[in-house]
Length: 456
Image 1 (cartoon, helix red, strand yellow):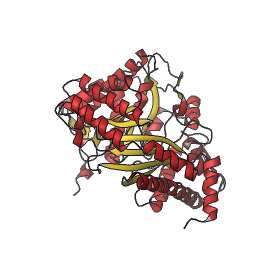
Image 2: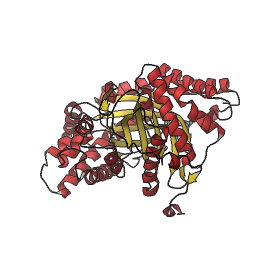
Image 3: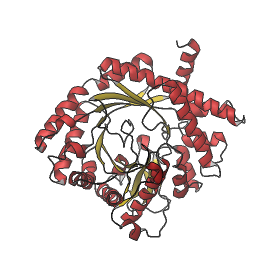
Image 4: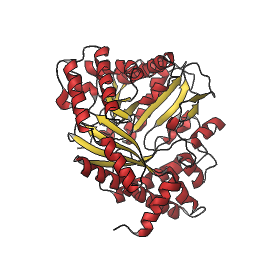
């Protein structure tokens, strides 16, 4: 039973502390859309998405109105397209054709984004996988709602360095193609590379519908950095036990809101409920910042000594509160540390308080990895691959999800701002080591999984 006091608290979180349901994501399996003819694949995909998602937006708006809970995005995730299109696609343009039908389908059902233009290549690449990866620059610059991801490593299989090299080249090509189309390299925001990608992730750009999932499933992502910060202001100066208990209890309340929305959407759409992802995903809005939480914990700015420890504390308590609130917490669930989407992180980067090396250290204990980091556009592809390889090593050795979402800013110098607008905000171009790793990246093959991966 929910008490009147809890209802009042939740209303306060929504009205004054930026609590929202960041997304309702409908996962759809496209395995039954496979065909040897690419046009039939496209027809099957369009038919299935527009049928299953026909009421998604209407249902989200009804729940939002009835419960007064803001639902910011409606999204769709689909089976990795390299699997769906593998039998039919013989060229880059064939895969781009599928990207365009995904985009059209998303527009017709009025969802914000559609994820799953993806490949899973942690141990090796098929011909279809390689074609899809090479098609990413065209696919993302010629569509508006399609998001893409590639899983290049895992704790069980090691790091596919051939894929890491190819993805580094792809990110740079995507930046150049986006810049040439007048988008200031911003299409790179729609691509992420993973180690240990979860297959139940509702957050873009990395969402896809896993092959172990049901035919369709409802996942919900909630976010509440402002709620956590406000709660911590009330225990300022208290000991660590009080600090941890406060974060944990707040995360519990936020997750319960997500659980309510997920179960309502599931019942009304007649689609099974999958998971709630409790991730502190910030926005550029004042009071909606993970960096501000770290400052409230006691850091002058993120990047100060103690930052990694404070982030580890925050992430762990968020997860503990979430799992107490729902039996089906999944996805990423923890603290995100994107630069451009977090006003406090932007400020820390512009002041020089935080560097890309410190961000990398923080990814050992956060939910994801180097997220929305702007780097010089004249950086060699091998250096981009090297950054990705470092993140993969952190994820592989520690058995956690890590990711890289980089924006090479073509024509921009270190310290210059790149404007993205909306929830994506802006960010300064961050310095990356000028020393080469090309000989390392150009070694062919796969880095083996660590010794502790041998568990059964």
